Image (cartoon, rainbow, N blue to C red; front, top):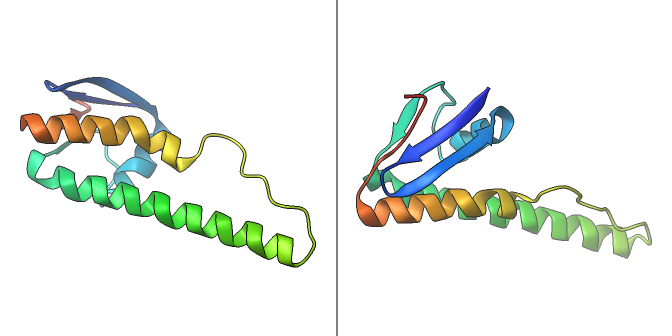
Length: 107
């Protein structure tokens, strides 16, 4: 399944199901086949995403420091980071909030 987030204020954003569900969970929404994010909730959603990125990066930094302190190989966090995944979502939320347009999916 794909999540296609749409708004009049931004281009469509398409996410695979795992990433779409992660995004919705991080902003406090229950993953569902369709829904809406109202402009008045977007600043909180942006803050929630930024906090999630901060927490993940702090945990990864702690793991690296711990491995170095123990003389072990530094862990590699391959793939696309949460910061990279959140960038287009945060951009869309900012544009839509500024323009006062909701974001919908599954409609």
